[in-house]
Image 1 (cartoon, rainbow, N blue to C red):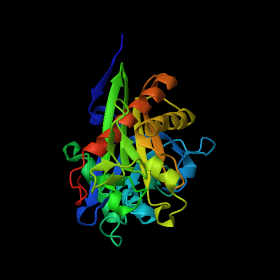
Image 2: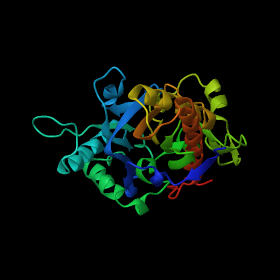
Image 3: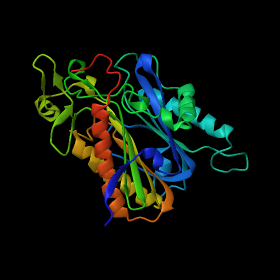
Length: 318
């Protein structure tokens, strides 16, 4: 009988993952390079996404593969990091073949981290390019306050006095020949839970009483708070060696959102731009239902890790 075992995400063939950050401004980006290009789907469920080239991933769109996915801080400004990734790929003659040269296909999503330290420094083309360079050295990959998770925070339902630091979480597992990994930057409006114990790991925290205040209960007491809107978002990606079509990967991305629902409460609100990409290197035959279920499991664990492996907490420690 096959059993699920934990693996290093760098064991999943066909992908390179790199972080780069402006640590002094608490912002950064994470790049997933697909070498060769990977089939990709996406499922966006939050009400306030900042994204690039997402329409290409519609199963009805004429796109067969992507060269990279970028997860970035900086809100919509952070979409500029993708330009650096395009430049990196162009220099390597990588992209969709045309009569005028290859055109790199790069999709990206951004989270809002402008309020933590500085709003005037955001991930840019230079940072996106550096993340690609860093992706070529597997030893540089780190979780916590790195890459897209550099400025990530959670528990923002009552404003900045109650937030906690989160970060970038990474986790991967293998079942038989099938390998699935999750990379996620957790910048949720809600609280983060350990699905196995029900314990609150991070969220709306009252530093005076030393207690967590449940974000969903806070929401129920609110009438409106415009300062909260659109300042959150959990963005992530599933990578797998399973051989799936774009339509099937879109379904896997959707099933991976169950990992969000297990680990974040509330989730998929109009305050958030929650998005998940799913990329396949098409190396092994695999069952869609099995892959989608495992994708939800690894995503929930990656979110848990993002909440507990923080690194630089920018003064937000309990």
